[in-house]
Image (cartoon, rainbow, N blue to C red; front, side, top):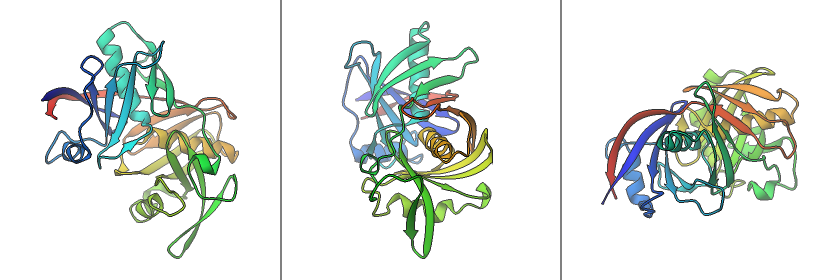
Length: 276
């Protein structure tokens, strides 16, 4: 059975969007997802966004998120911008709408400059809801990795994140520490790991080791996690430019229980079909 796809990127993050609002087929198995996610045996992606019909009044669609290793995750900030672009292009009129994600409702809008802004919900710092094993909530947690003691921030943006501050993003030990922190015993559902260099209060540089993927050119929820943890530490302003290897996004958060806004691009690479 063949289904059509859009291969896209959000700030360099490779996204496959499959629109199943009308047919509403089930997504492929984990084994098939791994084949499709590999450039040598499929179209290749970091995340696949499986779009289905809405389940609640007022929404235009729902979606599920799958990593290249076949695992299903709760949210993908770059991916939802790509979904919004596909749905907006399909309607040719809609520039503002609501989507349903596994992490909750997402508001999306197509801005006048062509950038796409989406809500990522309010951050969750309570360890049990991230989930992260700790005695209680804290701005910084001490994490032991091999012989190192690291002060890290932890937060959920619909998916678990661990953020480390580094002096220089170019020399940050992403490939060394990323996989170890991802699978650290204190993260029972694993974690995305962000390495953040603060340039000034309105600008950061960021590299992210994504859970189930490895280091990617960009991670939308990772950008949000970095900014909200920096805001909690009083190191960043309300609106922050986040420079990732694949380009720049803007994260805005007023604090408290307010939702986090993520703004960036969503570009079509190619179209095709996959065999389920």
